[in-house]
Length: 363
Image 1: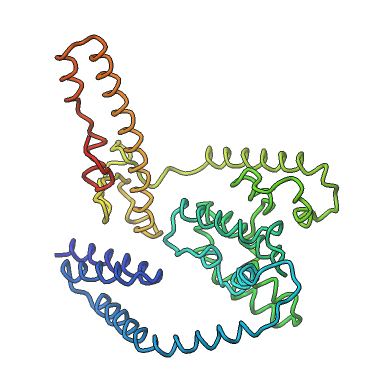
Image 2: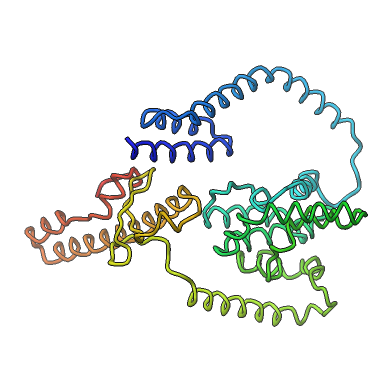
């Protein structure tokens, strides 16, 4: 049936995302599901590719083990350098330098949600902040990291980056070679497209995520971000002004933003019901959703499931508190009837989480 064919394609899309993350088990699972729903050639091609990579990895395991031992022995013989950074910190900077796009900078896939982007940023920002990482190039790498999360967590900028980011990179890379000189080429390696740059200072962005993670005596490294050579005494007011501007811009963008893509509640505007592929969560869209939406359906449905689970957890918490309050009241009055009624109160949100396999105990 044609409906099964669409579901089969969605399974292949999820399998591709899992494959790109290196999760072969999940990829195989959804490919098998795809084949059961509606056999497609794409699923068979991807399945064979995964099988070939698994066989190749097994065949090279012995060779790689010998190579690792030789590299370890070589490192033990290398003299220690008198530097104030570790090899791990230097490797973190070099990894950013080799990245080709913002998703690679953050170490996530193009299907990543906002929460996954922010989690990845927090982890990497603590490794790359120049107050902690003194390796050469840490300032530029830290700026690139802040630029990546600022663009990808902005819905409109992310959409434009997905559409035009690769073209911008190619154009910039070409101009770096034609102009000659290493400076332009290094700039390319850290910006990934001049048209996609954050309007906020990377240090201020860091403070917004962490609220200032380093002690005041370690602010010397932060002054490297001040392009006008101003004294550190004026930095608090500057940060406050930038944060205030960011809040105002965010509020204005929210006020003028277009309608959301979906709703968890059915309304006259959001009348068409759909269900997510993973948890079968119902959500509602407009009549022209399939014609107008050009983004990743799996990423959208991941956001639906996240929002639904957060909402249900909050509702379950309220239901439990209400039941416990009624039971406590019944005990204080010594009423067996009221106690039985309180114990039998329905808690639909907790039950829904339990059916999803999220709640450990059915209340």
